[in-house]
Length: 122
Image (cartoon, rainbow, N blue to C red; front, side, top):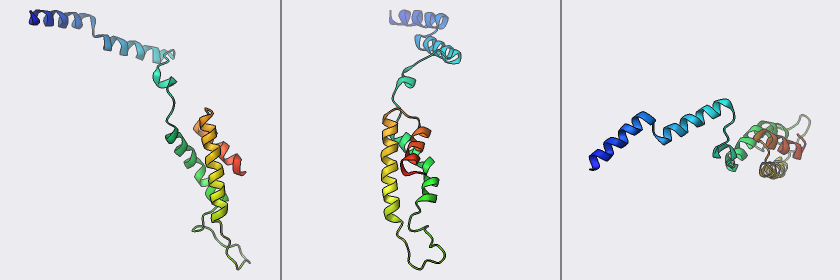
């Protein structure tokens, strides 16, 4: 009896297609038409990935305005070195807070990076 029911289910599946296949085909058609709203678009983005992307976008601008001590150069005419470490640490803290708050408020990665830049005036 099991062989007969298996054979019948295989015949039905062959002619009608499986439910998963039908759902995936209909979702693909809806995505192409631009009307599909699934759980992936409504699902929250990954905060850590967005945060790291925003900080990477802002890194070059931060390096120009707030060099770390390794890359800092003395200005011509000045004999005493200036410790850029404290300025950079304060700027990193400020931008990190601004980026995190912007992402928590629903901003995109680019908007969060701009919010970080504005927070330290760059």
